[in-house]
Amino acid sequence: MQQKFVEKEKLEIPLLADPEKKVTTAFGALSKSGMASRYTYVIDKQGVVKKIYTTVKPDAHPQEVFDYIKENLK
Image (cartoon, rainbow, N blue to C red):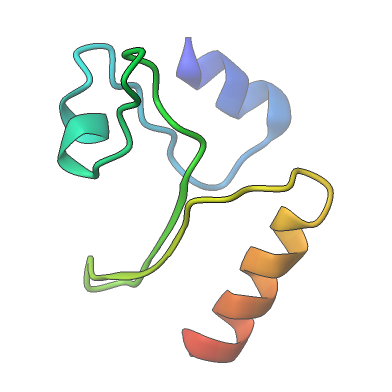
């Protein structure tokens, strides 16, 4: 399912499917209701989490993350 979405949207980044909620749990993003929280993690090329956004405002968030990456991950 993710692969079809990646192809349709022409994404150049991989998407993660986590049906067993292992990654969601490991990253502390599993809500009390059992659903994944809408968090954004900025991870550098070495696999180090550099920034965590726990509040996401859909209109401004993409630019906010882009600006952070541009300024901090060179």
